[in-house]
Image (cartoon, rainbow, N blue to C red; front, side):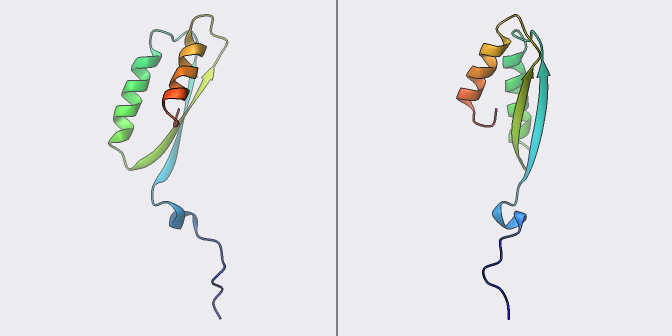
Length: 77
């Protein structure tokens, strides 16, 4: 007898694999928006779901604020 209440396999939930990108940053105020544009453009052409984890290493510029703005703008960041 088959069990119709068994949990779905992970691929049954989504056919796309999740890629986690870990981006360490320190004082990257001048580069963070360009990194966002480039990563977003590249990932849009690939068959993966993705998330970007920005790890701020004690920046003294606006890196932290820009990171927060990107997270508000795009849920994958």
